[in-house]
Length: 336
Ligand SMILES: N[C@@H](CCC(=O)N[C@@H](CS)C(=O)NCC(=O)O)C(=O)O
Image (cartoon, rainbow, N blue to C red; front, side, top):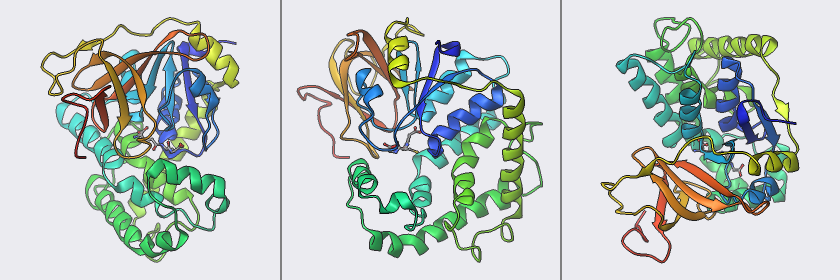
């Protein structure tokens, strides 16, 4: 077994974040391997690689491990520049990046997630709810979820409205008036597609095809484009955990280190022992290693895999993650 293009995506199929990446790969026809993960911890395959980060998806290219879809999509755009889906003009790039920030970095997705019907089997499974308590750092309560629902419906309605009355208002097929879906469509569509697919997430009297015909039609077009790309494109190679781990630890690095910016506001130095972790959720799962890259857009630490004792490099985006020097010091604490 091998991984086409050395890419292995660790995910589970109903992760809306993972779909951002699988859709991108499908629309581009890029071959890859996948290693399906359980929806709750433990995730032994990632642990074997030395990865503590607990969110999904994670992508490896050789011994470089990329966390967070913002960084994963950027890396794929750079690694496969011919036929990339990213915008070319500055104002279009701005729309694309602002859409990424809107859907990934604002409360939008947690509002969407608050609309998961509490009648879904997973929501009644104590293993799942306990796992998500640990993830969010907040106690799980069906009553609190039900009480918060009307506010979240109102929040999401305003998001549907924004798309209906601005970006899609003139009847265009795709956000940047492209002939096919572009990265801007992926950046925008994923939470909306997820909610529309999830029966019972929103009352039809408030959010439906009737109130938001352009958003619903855009979602249908996007799904059709994906179906078409899937029917002609490559099927991902499925790897078992042990196979994926073996392939990764015996491969090379995909890219050189990016260096540590001497001007970075944190004042950290190359080679320092640091911890990296997300600031919004899953923050108790930290990766500790030697700082090898610190730039305006990325942080990378080198650590060793548990299986095979090989150096691995864990990459995360520069924003939405905290980097702290092990043992304290100037960056060892924060109020946030
Ligand atoms: N900002 C992250 C968010 C990823 C995220 O929150 N993923 C969800 C799955 S959709 C997750 O990891 N949930 C907890 C889990 O699966 O352990 C990204 O863009 O990749």
